[in-house]
Image 1 (tube, rainbow, N blue to C red):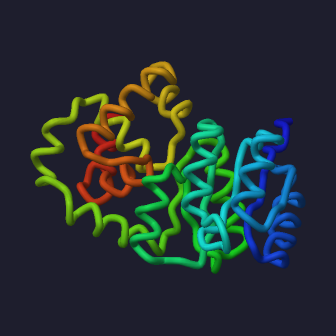
Image 2: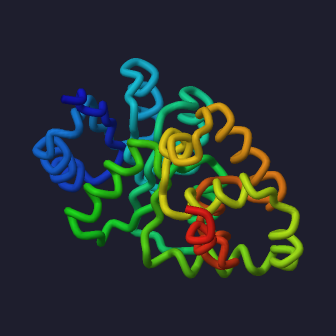
Length: 221
């Protein structure tokens, strides 16, 4: 049996933190190692505890969630950070992705959906609230070069990697599917981010769905 994922909660609402702690602890998949009400406390505690994952509110008094996220990613690049917020604003979503968020969920998510998304994120998958997928795709459309020219610029392996990212596969699972190493997958992901002028796996997934590349997997599997 796998060890529970160590999880740190950062949110300024105590009742919500208590409910989240009960949800994740009862699942058996997580061990809540800390629960704090501010970004500054979260950064300090994360440095001490080295959690594998952080669930982070975006709008808090004092040091806000974006600044906290950036600091956490500088401090612990391997730590997975899922933003859990009430904000469905495009600017907040894009700013969080650019700061390194591994997922972005809204607080009105059903508990079972939230738990499933955080489990997937902890395993290396990118997770975006379904209500925000169209919002993200629209923002990418505004700044993209013509899709056809970008599609042509991708190698076959990059297209395959992108299609699997769109399905939510982690680097390890992509490597198994394609018969290549995790390190090689990381190289393909880096190339994709550069070619498409994107900054995160979530943006890659949204671009793949909008361009139709998410459906290309059927051509080679």
